[in-house]
Image (tube, rainbow, N blue to C red; front, side):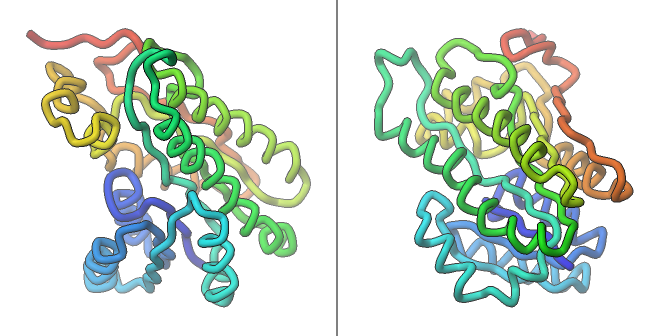
Length: 251
């Protein structure tokens, strides 16, 4: 059986792919950047001797997800762990200054993308009476911070949907977990600030944030628990961060 990871071409998704491959799990990796996926797949197959399938797919687009599952149904049926990792933030500021196009991108990716992929996998998991759905949430799905409004709203939705999935699949043998990190140094801020590296780097100035590897190790640990154990929600921060608004920064 294998692990499906969306947004697997970089950051937390790539780190999770490496962690699961090291644990000898076969992989199904999905992202928009097929070239990066293929490079990663070659590395993992060579180093860990696992099977890795890669697919270019934009989870924002329902027809793209549906086409993937129709065309490659045999591969998708091997999946027993689903990691809904694809997600992003675009822009930061008060709602009155926000860009509705950015709002659409965040909701389409963080909420609708998660729903499209999860909906596609649920019938086979329910039929098999097993499976594990792991949703990449955020501390922003538990606490709102200034100027994070729409991103926070999408991650609150992920938090609610994760709880709802747990209720809807109760008794099916499916486990449902949410991982909610605080500050993680990856391409996240680069994307949020649309390539403005001065703004992106300032987020982590004076602090040692979590790394994608830290998050990946936690994801793997949750997935490795016995079948009767479900880790429902993990909230993880760097030691120097006490909340979404409070971090200790070295001068």
